[in-house]
Length: 157
Image: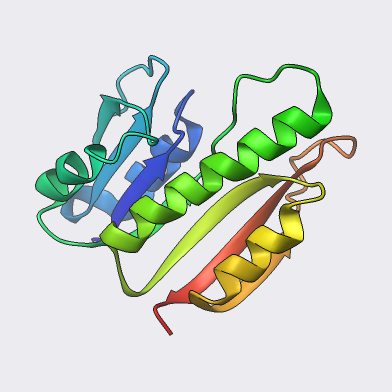
């Protein structure tokens, strides 16, 4: 029965899992600039989170604020680590602006981050918005990968 927004949803794995978890009483929307194949039980839109007009489309689909936001955003990787890291963190800030307008009080979020010089600054930003922020690296993530996830619980404290 939860309402879940998946920002940066391509290729669709998180969206599929969210759709299964929320069941037929919940709603899931995925947003990405890339094409994403249809996911049963989810509404996919091709859009850019840097365009703030997307907020109206999100709120219109759900009809209320959402329970959870997934941010699995990644820029077009250039191979220049400092540029890629800075762009990925910038995308997370854009996602957080959307989250601030669509996430319900005490809702939860997860943000993928490329670990680097701006990671702690972004974590501190999230800590001002959530009751609890935990850092995790899933077992499925390659050891050499710099991807980490901030699991954020209890929005709006």
